[in-house]
Image 1 (cartoon, rainbow, N blue to C red):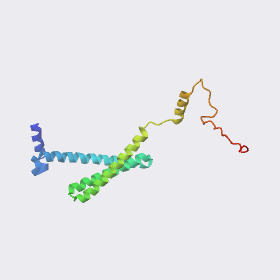
Image 2 (tube, helix red, strand yellow; image 1 turned 135 degrees about the vertical axis):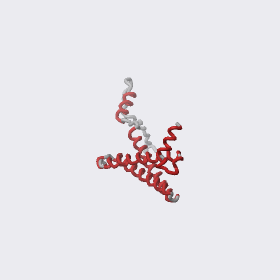
Image 3 (tube, rainbow, N blue to C red; image 1 turned 180 degrees about the vertical axis):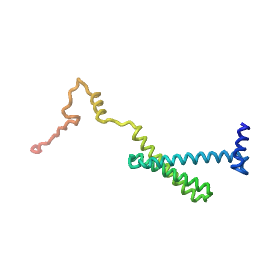
Length: 160
């Protein structure tokens, strides 16, 4: 372990100059470089996929657009953070990021509701209920469940 740290320090001596002894800075810088490479690969994939944008379904278009909006806002936020911009600009970017994140959550909820929710087949349910309620001993009512008509008594006006 100590040997690898010393080898790393020797390798980065020329590259980092005065900061060659600050291993935390070197490690953070390496993580930043790896992250930037991953972002470049993701953007290259997005650029390739944009050629098929016209063939996307509506849901795929919304996902693609929200992903692009989130990536651009995140990259801009990182850029401004590295430049040390004032917090007012950063607050606007963060609010945009939160808005896009909420839109992505709503999209996921809509997708889950459409795909994971069981659907009721109403005609089949009616058949099951009708078959379950059928009784061989009873005769069907002619009134179809309507209440019987009340007999109205009419007073004879002649007798009054």
